[in-house]
Image (cartoon, rainbow, N blue to C red; front, side, top):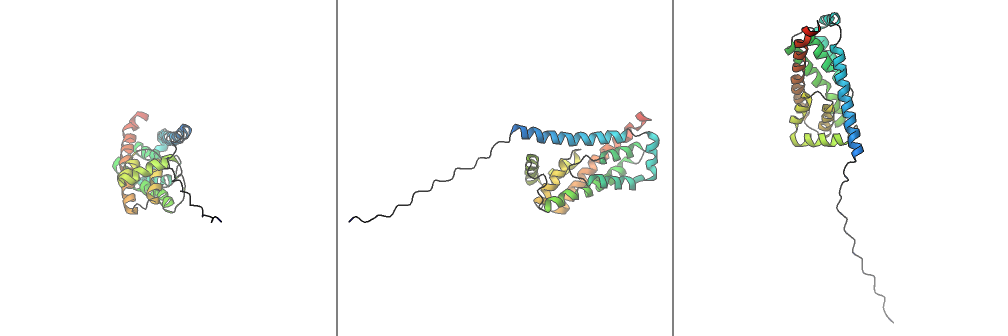
Length: 204
């Protein structure tokens, strides 16, 4: 009588290496389109504020630098929405306020407003984290740290909101993020305030 031989275990095929699929062109176009819409909205708001009549601009003196600070702080606290913060600095320069002081106050206010994005990222929220733009910006933050935050804060674009989410999610030290944000925003608003100051005579 032949004895039954136990079946030998079959080798388990090794898992194939994972190869991520390249992003679809339609997704890339959609991400680029959304970014362009946000930038265009910001620029249109800025232009609209700069075209405010000069007699209305003169009334800004009743609010002065405190008004510029508060308006910029509130405008910068939004995430992924067009912000009139640039227009506020441009308008202040047009009204004859000191461009250096306007730039400094606006930079501090805007930097404080960007805390919102950092806190959202630190909370673990997946807001915008599934987009390819976030993946790209996160790579920049991971590679260059606060230098990325500084550069994106100095450029008039909503990408700084994405950098704030990434910095928070990656637990970048808060004080480093805040200082880089304030410095970048200050550079941006000093330039904008001087542009408003220089162009004011053209619209008188």
